[in-house]
Amino acid sequence: MTGNTFAQDHLPFETLVDRWQSLSASGPVRYDERQGAWQVTDHRTVSAILADPGTYSSDFSSIAPAQEDFAAFRQGNFVGMDPPEHRKLRALVSQAFTPRVVSSLEPRIEAICARLLDDVADRDRFDLVDSLAYPLPIIVIAELLGVPADDYGLFQEWASILFSGDALGEAPSMDDLERALAVIAPTVREMNGYFLDHIRRRRASPGEDLTSRLLAAEVDGVRLADQEMVGFVALLLVAGHITTTALLGNAVVTFDRLPATLQRLREDVSRLPRAVEEVLRWLPPFAELGRRTTRPVLLGDRELPAETLVVAHLGAANRDPAHFEAPHVFDPDRHPNPHLTFGHGIHFCFGAPLARMEARIALRMLLERFSDLAVPAYSDVTFQNPSVIVGVRHLPVEVTRH
Image (cartoon, rainbow, N blue to C red; front, side):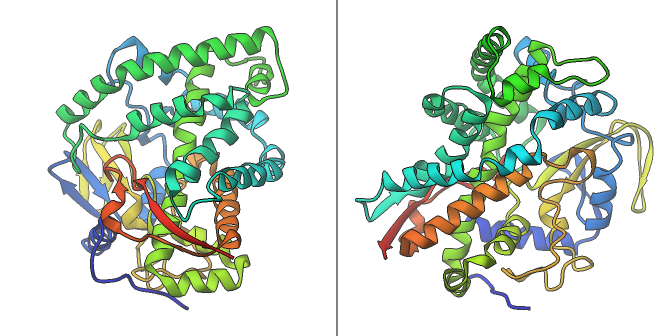
C-alpha cells in the first residue's frame, strides 16, 4: 500500500480528519451533548443503521418547521422519506435518471469543462471554485433538467445561502437550526416559485429533458404531481451539484498537500478513479447523516427509546480499522474502498455516478492543461462550515501551462 500523511501545519480539513480519527477510536456509540444525539462511528453499525429505515427513519417532518415553503419542498424530497413513499418516488426518478442518461453526458461534461477552462486561459491565477467547481455541475444539471443554464448564477446564489451555515456553529443546537431555517426561508420560497413555473411550462410543452421524462414516468399508474416535482428538481439542482463542487475543491486541496500523490497522478491519469474514491473517503462532503429511532433499540450496549436522534458519522466510519487498512493514511491506490460517503441502503445517492464522472473529467483536464497547479496561500482559502458541508467556498490557485 502506498500512502501519504499530511503536513503538520493543520488546516481546517486536517483538524477535521484528526477529530474523525479520534471519534473512530473512541468506541462505536457515544452521546454528544452539544448535538443532543447519539453518534455512531463504526462502519458496521453505521451501515446497519442506514440499511434499516424501518427502525432508523429519515423522516423528520414531525419536528421540521411548519412553514408552507418547507412543507412544499418536502413533498418531493425523497432523501427525507421512508418506505413506501420513498419507493414510489425513487422508482419514478430511476426511470428517467438512468445509467444510460448519465453515461451519455460525458462528451457534454468534457465540452463544458473545456469552455470553463478556456475562460481562464489568459490568467495564471484564478479561483477554482468560481471558475470550475461551482459552474460545471450546475450547468450540467441545469441542461439535464431543461432549465436555463444562463441562470446558473442564481442557482449558485441559492446554494450559497442554503449551505453557508453562517448562522450555525460547528455543533449546532436546535435553537441554532431554527434561526438558520428562518434565514433561508425566503430563498426556499423563491426556489419554489421558480421550479413550479418551470414544471408547468414543461407539462404544457414537453421536451427531451429530464423534467419532461419525470413528468411522463409512472409507477403503478401513479405519476408525480407538480409540487412533488418541485421538491425533486430543487434537490437535484441545488443540493445535487454541491457534492461535486465540494469533491473537486477537496481533491485539489488534498493533492496540493500531498505533492507525491499529485505527481503520480500526472504521470498516469488512469489512477484518477481510485484517487477520487479516496478523496471521498478522506473528506466526505456530508460527514454526518441524522436518523430518528421509530422504536426502542439496543445500539451497541446502549438502550435508546423511540424518537431518539441518532447521527451516523460517515467521517469516522470511513476510518474504521476493521474495514480499512491504515485508515489514517491517504492512499490514492486504495482498493477495495468501501467508504460510506454516498450513503448505504435505500438512500444511497442516486447522483453518485454523475458526481464521480464530473470529478474524474474535471481533474483529468486540469492535469492535462496545467503542468503545475498549486494553492499559493491557504490564508486566502475560504472553508465551508463543516457542520453543513465539508468543502471550500473559495480556492485561489496558481497555474503553469504546458
